[in-house]
Amino acid sequence: MTQLAQQRSAKTSSKVIYTAKTHTTGGRENGVSRSSDGRLDIKLSPPGSSRTGTNPEQLFAAGWSACFEGAIGVVAHKKKIKLPVDLAIDAEVDLNSDDGEYFLSARLNVSMPGIERSVAQGLVEAAAQVCPYSKATSGNIAVTYNVI
Image 1 (cartoon, rainbow, N blue to C red):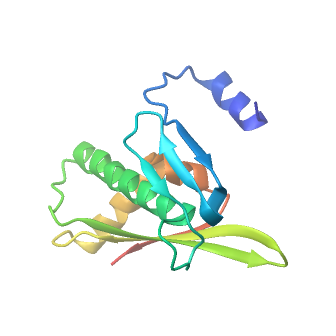
Image 2 (image 1 turned 60 degrees about the vertical axis):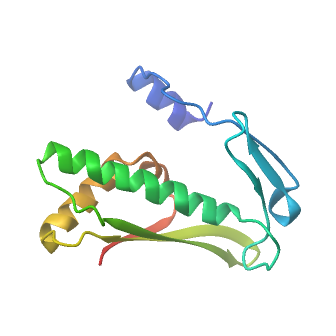
């Protein structure tokens, strides 16, 4: 267990509400990933490849943007703000390389039509403190949250 994980478990008692389980073989080059419940069964391919399949960066972007939209909903509900039905998040996850070292960076572009910009910005900032993906990436990768 990492020091941070030890600190978190020492600070709070938590209840696991869900565990995602997948089995992956072949990696990003020519892999397959399947979930234990059979609901996910995908082929993997390198980013930018014309091969059939998706890549880990696309999967991360999809998961993070879905989670972030849920976090905005939690924050808006607490503040009694009605969100537009056409709220949308365009997530961009970059796979970067510097001298053979790989790292990620990301942008979440949030559209909330009909919501005043300052209110939308406040919801996005609060959601970044609620979303588990945003918490996991905070201080670990460069992330920009844009209200568009």
